[in-house]
Length: 399
Image: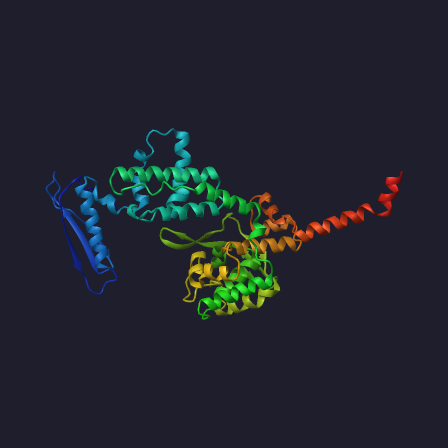
């Protein structure tokens, strides 16, 4: 780890790369230096799968040492670098500002970007992280504070000459946030129109992925029918399914983390139960059989048995290309959830029941799915006309 050995600033380094056959990472890169105080010769090493990566590691440390920067910081992850330099990054701020900044660092920046080396933080990586925070329905001030602390940490990296410019100074996120807010105000506009459109999409995705794995289409059908997030579909285990009452208890979701994909609790931190409609019950039974009816088996996996994410689904099926060809350029994987909730609302599911199925923390969020369609408005007008023309209404008017 970066904190295990402290290098004097500006030391002269010697380096070598050793090839060790038979290992997953056979190239061992090592740097040595002479401690000016103790005169001892400590070293630092890392192993790599490719020789070019090993040479790049050595060059970054040598460059950092020549610039007068602690060479070990050149290989630090963002999380390690931020923790080591946070007092410098936040200097001059009052406690009332520091507290929300640190919350943004711990809860959003580190989970999204903390595993990346400082030198690998790009505008694109920050853009994707910010979009994910917005899509996760974080408030505007929460997003602002998270970006602000990232900007300060990366500005310190610029001063340390680890990077040439600050990639966290992203622009346009407010407009992106406004777009997301507009979508949440009218989530119905993001839904597929009917079951035929959904099955057509599922079949097209399977066909585009060479037609060798039906699972991609089944994931899409299951997600829309249950109004679930793709991560929740990935986290579904056989024991979560009740084939007697035909319900699914949503207990967990698969999500990216610094160490790779992990399963954690649902977004609302509470389990919820959703119905399994007749149209997907045969599909569910088939998936249970494929999992050998193992209670801990995943109901849905990738073709090689791995966990799935929205990004995996997109890449494996050429999602963007398929939805554009079908005329749904706006459609994202998360819109399968909007589709399911819209259909349930149109089917007459009471709003307080719909809220529990969706797992919404606020009833206001659920009510957005109840916006009447055009036919509902026409029907409402006809009902009002009949009411006003009723004999009782005419009698009261005459009196």
